[in-house]
Length: 205
Length: 205
Image 1 (cartoon, rainbow over the protein chains, first blue to last red):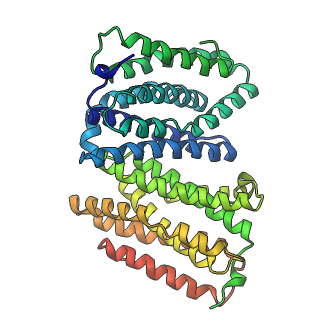
Image 2 (cartoon, chains in turn green, orange):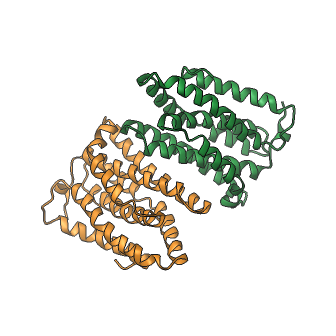
Image 3 (cartoon, chains in turn blue, red):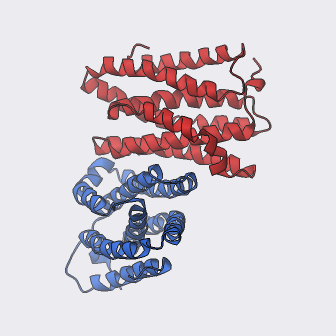
């Protein structure tokens, strides 16, 4: 399926993806700072570093096109700051699940759109955003938290279902067009991958 | 001057340095999260990434010697968490100055001690901790803050003078011996470099 017309111009794409990854870094840093054990802190620091590398890789693409990072990211600050606020969760476990699910979904989304970017930037970005090292750590910590405290399971399942709606809104806002028959199949893929992430944690999606 | 006897055993050294750099990363992440402009956020994210690389480089050295990072860092958590709390400052500018001065002084200190580590680890660590890319960003942001608000100068000068005492206590606690004639020359060097950093900002040390 050709999604070229769904993809915004390159700097718009890069600015939104870069600011999203910066926000992921901030959320994961907060998870590092508030981690209950030193081992969790250590593992999560890798995930924070991974998000930061994604951010810096996207910033490099912006600079390569003579974009000024703060100007290019600027338009996305209000919506993404709001998104980060409403998906921050009530505690450390909810924050972790949010990073895992919203990061997974939006990385998938930006990778999917990268197919339709002009020139050779698409494969570079797909490679950059496809570095899933950080996700393994999150999966491990969330699974350990649920195992230690089974009552978490239903609360996190509810939280995971709530997150997906807000996250899909961010994805929709990143499209060049919002009414197009080619959008729904993209969203169907994203939701299927989200469901697999929930299933992997034993949570009902 | 031979400082071999001042240096603790290798894992002790690595654990303390690694947990210090993790704390620097947390402080710099906090500075990113609370930065007043997107340009400052972007610059500071590089400094946070640099501290994280130092931390992960030290963790790699711990693992190479079959150390378990959380166990090796564990003994330093109370003192360094307390140090981070008392040096966090009242606002963003004080936090930045703290990262610049305490990070500068303790990186210098751990580099100085690395001379006396056994085998080839010393030069590797000196190289790792000598990556000063993050410091330039901090210097720039602090200088810009003072230029924009000259009344900051005397408050930050006072804060800088207060920080040095607490920071030297951390350095002293990292020595294998605390009473030795070879300690004072090391401290004299550290204080001289601290004074140069203060001077570079136009602050009276």
